[in-house]
Image 1 (cartoon, rainbow, N blue to C red):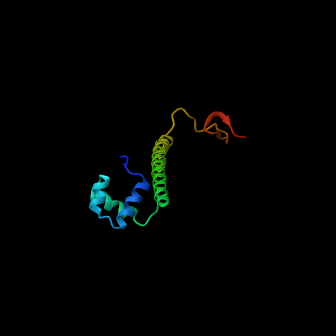
Image 2: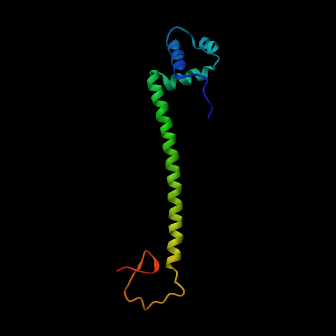
Image 3: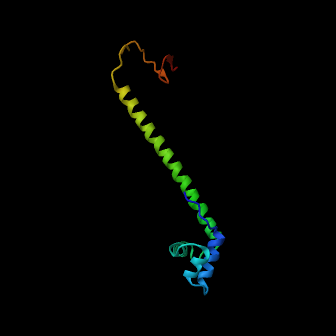
Length: 118
C-alpha cells in the first residue's frame, strides 16, 4: 500500500486552513498536492479532530486483520469439509478383508483394530 506523505496532524492543519480564508488553489500550491487530494481529505476527514482520525485508522487496520483471519479460517473450514467428504465416501465403501461376524458385540475403540471398549 502506498504510504502517504502527510501525517494526520498535517492533514488537519491543511483542512483548518481551508476552513479559514485561504483558497483551495493556494493551499494546493503551498503544500504541493492536487486539488482532488484536498477535496478527498475534506470529504473523508471533514469535521474530525486528530484523535478521531487515528482511531479511524486503527479500526481500519483491525478490520483488515480480522478479514485476513476470517479468510484463513474459511479456507481451513473448506479444507476440513473436503477432507471429511473424502473420509465419508471412503468409509461408506465396503471393506475388504473384514469379517462381518465374530465381532461378538464389542466395539472398536477410536477405530483402532484390536482395541475393544469395555
